[in-house]
Length: 258
Image (cartoon, rainbow, N blue to C red; front, side, top):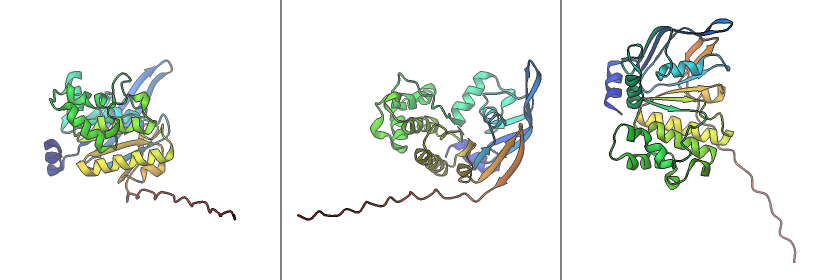
């Protein structure tokens, strides 16, 4: 657990606080309201699923939390920092120091190995042990044997594991995951979800999962539903345990008589 995370948890300050935020954008047809008076507080170590149909504003809300999208009005405070008051360089530092982001499309650099991809955020912060820590992160996600492979040599599930390792290697306070299982089959998606939950529990990380999958959402401790840019539901849940693996029955074989 990072010093900032421990301090935040002890003072009961939310890790993420969106207060009455709205986001509007101009279009040829007029102004389009993407987010409308959204207020959300997410505490340290909390796991939150953000549900909603395509175009509801859930991914935009995540981009606001990451400091990648500004708001028209309202306040955005992340890890104790008022993002509205910061310039692009400072926002990049906040992301580097506090936030890990996982995208549905992986966003790995094709010309770099798994190890090199994971080491990028550590190299950006000047860590001398970047590759050693990257190897540990890859081992933690079950890819210690694939560190020298390039993205096109990995399966979709393996590429997403590399993306997760890259997101967690700096020990972020916050993990933002945008449809991380959307490009994966059900079995692989379940494994990725298990990994995200284990990571959040192990490090006390605040996990925000953007999804349209109701079953995945029940794995988290809180569900926020967004419709037409506004929160339509916000409730605590009792997280469901991962579904047990299906047993396959072995085929009966009969011995042929000699």
